[in-house]
Image 1 (cartoon, one colour):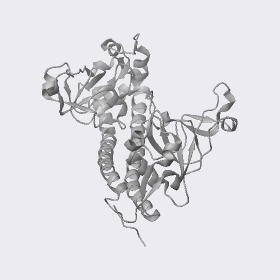
Image 2 (cartoon, helix red, strand yellow):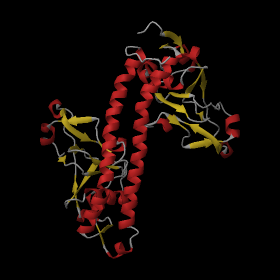
Image 3 (cartoon, one colour):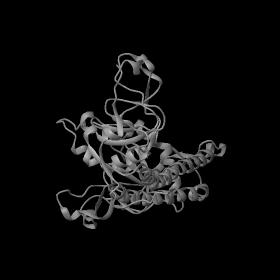
Image 4 (cartoon, one colour):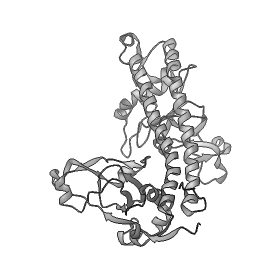
Length: 394
């Protein structure tokens, strides 16, 4: 670590503020103009800056609760259920009591503090207390010690990490636009097109094969930690956009051989069928799936993306048809009775050809973002400890 780095308590570099929740019994406390952030809003939130959450509160709600209006640049830190989600306020916001937020003193970099807290998530959690769920109190947070470089170096470090996140965020926005364009093409060709009204309507299984999955025995170690990605419903829900690239767990070929799971080919559409029904994505390579998912693989060549967008158009039907006493479920019968437009094979191939460049660009962006995220995550602890130094101009 460089000699210029100085150890400081959090309260030496920022003012710390808690949050609050107005009484939910008074509707006048909500639906105002003040963004109100809860930990749920940061669950899976992929960006550094946040401007609003699911709900707003009113001036009355602000004034009659412990919520506080926080300025632009405030570093929002969840300190209970769970500890360690971080974001930066893009505009004035307020939070509930699940946060202790840091308003940096003059000169200290909000972005550096953001990355510092992300790099020290386990340190934050280790200082939490509580039996039901961990909570990091405001007084404890204020006393926590971190090492800080000079303010110019803070900004330089934040710029290095921020440039990587900037590109990742740009890719996300670009992919959202590309997917919207592809959806618009599908809608124009197969939903709004007058000719489509004369085409056949039938089950999605007329042009896609339904594939099921399974779980190898968790009691047999040799079935796990192999090189075959194994897709759970959680992986589908966590997929960064159209394609699923990575999974939490992998299985071995022995795990495939001794269970009902199968290795599905690339560009198979995956849809969740139990619990949270209707999340969907495409495999970017061959993978196995568990029993909470179904796979839909095109029967014809050059029809994979048509299957994907047909399924996307079918999701509402699937959710409405789901049933179950403990959790929602869809079955083979659900797909058999589905209703989608079935155009001529030639039209499907033309559509696939039209959207393929968009989908390939989406996949390329996702792969690039994965590489950039890995680089950022590798640099983060080394930059925050001073092991890797950043030159400061001037």
